[in-house]
Image 1 (spheres, one colour):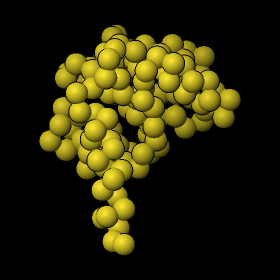
Image 2 (image 1 turned 45 degrees about the vertical axis):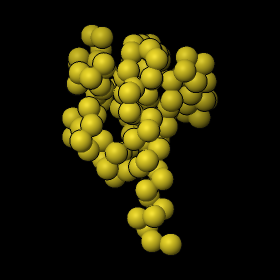
Image 3 (image 1 turned 180 degrees about the vertical axis):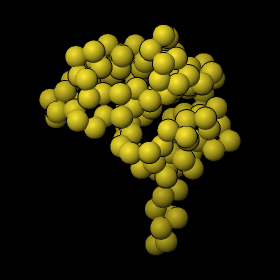
Length: 125
């Protein structure tokens, strides 16, 4: 099977998740302990937030020609994505609260209700 055929389902999954999303937040998770990551994933899941780690190239393909296109500039290094289709503030709120205790977690940027915010903008929301 060609590499493109293997990558297409992943890109399609990301595209499906970000389509009609209330908010999409990009974070650098590097440095979190396994216990911290497990706690974070549990809290996000309980609030209906999709949280996944994808390759940057896959997110790059999925973000093109969408509201998330402005996030492409932040796709360097390890990234995870938090997506909510129902609550525009949930991903940013949960991640920001969690980052107060887990200094390794860094919110890079996000799209909230179609508007792009850099790291400083995300902290204010």
